[in-house]
Image (cartoon, helix red, strand yellow):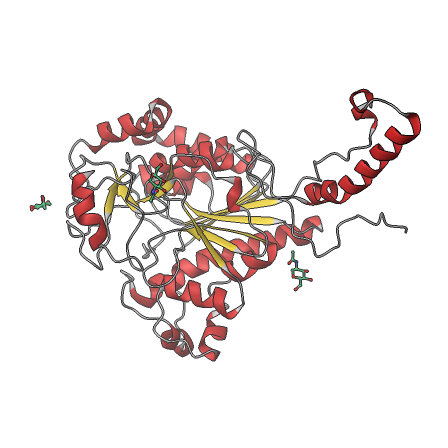
Length: 428
Ligand SMILES: *[C@@H]1O[C@H](CO)[C@@H](O)[C@H](O)[C@H]1NC(C)=O
Ligand SMILES: *[C@@H]1O[C@H](CO)[C@@H](O)[C@H](O)[C@H]1NC(C)=O
Ligand SMILES: *[C@@H]1O[C@H](CO)[C@@H](O)[C@H](O)[C@H]1NC(C)=O
């Protein structure tokens, strides 16, 4: 078949997805844009000839006569992968819906989470524009091989190597679901967005984050490697970035030892020649973990979820702020750049004293920061009854193209009837 000479070659990077509701000016040049660039000389030449031949006044050339190609290229396919435990999903869920899922309403959503007493909170996803697969798996210990023990370190992970493997398995499971969808539908996704169930978003996921050939991650919280709390890449770079378990063999061969999550992540991109790009993103990780205050050089700052931001994936919680402005100028520079640091200048970060569990009255602080809708969801989930829970889960099951998990009653039982669970709690 004859191809138009200016048609983009097959290897061209996919165009960025079209967002639902925000600025498209920031989008990177798409195939369409390049098409336009190539046509400009032709158009101007045509224009020049037209002016010469017909001696028309420049102003009177009918501009819309020229066949400008539409800058819109065919819709790229986006997969959004949401992984992790639903522990505080009643708080993070509304923000993920608003700032990630509803921004890309055409995207396919894949969820991978362990079954526990918080799984029922995932019922909130019935409000997502599209749910492709829900995988809520029964927790099980993963085997730890000699190779994995060699490459990974127990330090830094609260549950040692098992905790790392569990996390890697959740992430890589997303890639399995995506492949299955691709095989069934005979297509490939152009982009994969990988994000976490415990992310609290304060602004939309930016189109600037879609960079062909690179893997984009949040700036800061590197812990000597790369921040792995969010990642965006094209199909090829995501294949590498999400293969957290299976690439450990490659890292072993390359001689890497004693890696934690962040250093392993960096190593797997480097070994595969994928340039990471760090950008600041408007989300934080809502966490119950406690860290010393004030943070020291290799400490972890616990930020207020109400900080102006962007917090770029720092740990956060609802709290009474104990440090901002001048206080931040004292504490900020002390935290090591390659470790727990996140950009704090210009008032973007405010700190909590995170050395204790969440403070009394955090609910009110949360409601003030997150707004009315989130406050309603929080109270609804807190007071949810069994029947209501089952109804919500059934609704989500109906919405999901594939349901890979227990039935609604079992999920709701775990949380709301306090029956002995058939599952063991596992670290993740
Ligand atoms: C992705 O990888 C495949 C196979 O390695 C290659 O043929 C293709 O050109 C790559 N696509 C992009 C956009 O880099
Ligand atoms: C702080 O704000 C100034 C002025 O808007 C800007 O030039 C600078 O880049 C900002 N610094 C950081 C670290 O964001
Ligand atoms: C942080 O909180 C703990 C526990 O409430 C308290 O003992 C400690 O003094 C606080 N630290 C600072 C620097 O305020």
